[in-house]
Image (cartoon, rainbow, N blue to C red; front, top):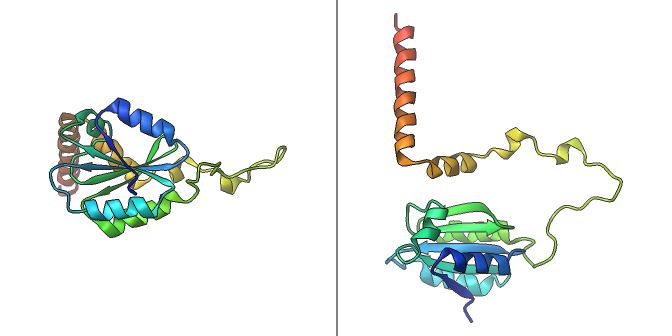
Length: 170
């Protein structure tokens, strides 16, 4: 039996994420093309510890805007209320790999790393700011920028590059 929930608004999404807050949730943002739908359905039956949802971008524009969806299909992976991954395009292998990667520990129980009371974390277990900035996070931040700001930044970057080249040529 399929366990795919259809999302039609932000309140729907909030309800589903709250009900599955200890699980990995995957949102399939789709439009009229349903090329990957049979594979998504099969994955939902195989990975019962994952909350699978579908969101028609035309019917729920507020949800697609919240996650900066610009291409369909796009699959957003949410764990503990945070976006942890994104797969763009009808790529069954990438979709399945992301589900396997992020669904470990999605059994409804505690999935974090524990510490004994009175013990201290070793320096290697505490991430530094440079370790937490990933290319995915940078791209995600870029996608959230207003398109006019993106163009402005590109123009300024091009201008600075031109200036640097002109100084080095003389």
